[in-house]
Amino acid sequence: MDTYSFLRQLADSWVLLMLFLFFLGVIGWAFRPGSRPLHDDAAQSIFGSEDAPRACHGSCATCACAAADDKIGDAR
Image (cartoon, rainbow, N blue to C red):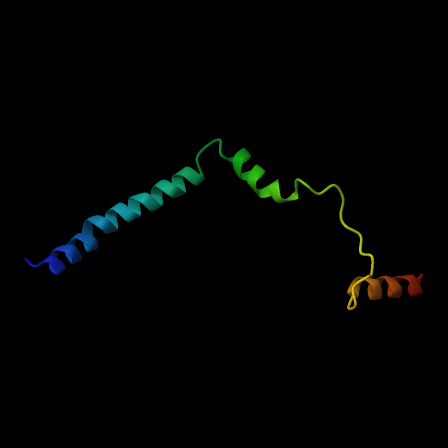
């Protein structure tokens, strides 16, 4: 048996099985009991440094916020 045929047969059987088991392991690790607090913390970590939403100052040349504020002010 030449090298290519051996490696092809190995990849088609055992390596495929190993990759499938690795996939199941990753899925099992992500959904394991008790991991919800870790995932929630990671999901909210980008919002941790914000104290309050930034206000638009209308200083940019193409500020859509300032135009929207003008329309709201005119309606009042």
